[in-house]
Image (cartoon, rainbow, N blue to C red; front, side, top):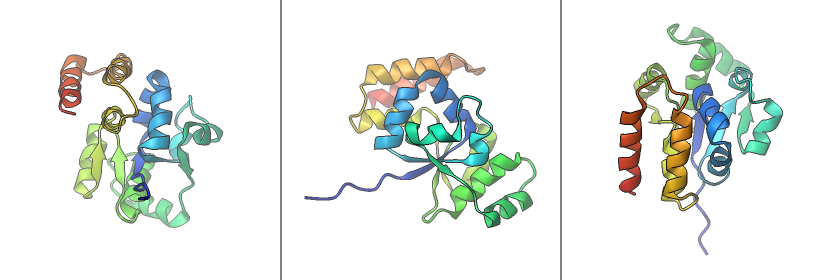
Length: 169
């Protein structure tokens, strides 16, 4: 019998966690337990009103207290991002092999890509849940709609792209 492949480590930012906690918490839990090993840094947990560090385990999230050397490195990095965002990048960059980041923030995506990190969009977890057979397409569509309901961006182009990605599975 072959052992299951380890789940990839994905480092979440505050934006995607807020989106999922507000609209699709059950799929966040499923994804964090079955698809990805979702790491969230404790300074980022502190930014999210609807998430306390004690709830991370219940949600399947791995709360990570950053080590001092990472805090120092984040302090000296690009000033165009907040300290928490710089820490998020430094932590992902220092994972061996390099981690994957999960965000909807365009600037953070650009910074992560410039650092050579793989980047997932927020809705990519829903696609992966469907791809691996943990969720149905209709459930993923409903969750995407709920997540995007609070978006300040044009939702229809994002939903059209999401529908096309689902259809391609």
